[in-house]
Length: 176
Ligand code: HEM
Ligand code: HEM
Image (cartoon, rainbow, N blue to C red; front, side, top):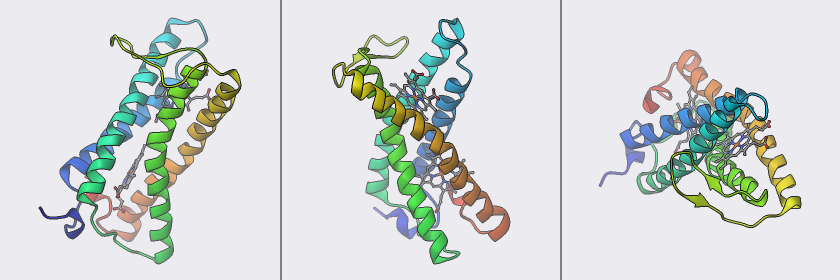
């Protein structure tokens, strides 16, 4: 089988995984931003959406990483060595984010004494037991990473758009 590093664009599954994960991350953020006050129906509904979207991010992250390790990626279009280095750093951070952030979410619920329950599914996921001290630290980490990645994702998107509109190369088209 031909390795996609020798091709000039991302494979169809890689493109599919990239944009599905993007939409799910956006939905997780949207749900948490508009969830409304404690005790409201809106909060219950949007929290359920947040948990579903976040859990699906983790599921697709696994498929995506396996595919990436198996098929590789096309060679980068290099504008400068510094920008290539920065882009790689951001890509590694984004891969870490789509695993770590959902896992912290699950650990936050579990250490608070709740299993992860996904609305409409009859499963309860418990990875660890209750621990008030750990919950406090994990919640802070989930909130902090959540806020920090608005900027990292923004930087990544800005990089893609700069390639397209300023450098006028195929970086963005290869991911469409
Ligand atoms: C990529 C996926 C995810 C992103 C981007 C994300 C992001 C966020 C953000 C920004 C907040 C708001 C924190 C605040 O300012 O109050 C939050 C809260 C929360 N997240 Fe996530 N999250 C993700 C996945 C998950 C998952 C998978 C779970 C659980 C299984 C989860 C559980 C929670 C809970 C319970 C809260 C509410 C914390 C509270 O207010 O007590 N998250 N998340
Ligand atoms: C939650 C949001 C996002 C995440 C987690 C994410 C993650 C990633 C990762 C991990 C890669 C590296 C792929 C690999 O080499 O295997 C990548 C590549 C790419 N992403 Fe994103 N991305 C997000 C949003 C966006 C947005 C909004 C855009 C466009 C505006 C975008 C455009 C691209 C492009 C063009 C590439 C290919 C870069 C290259 O060939 O060097 N991404 N993304």
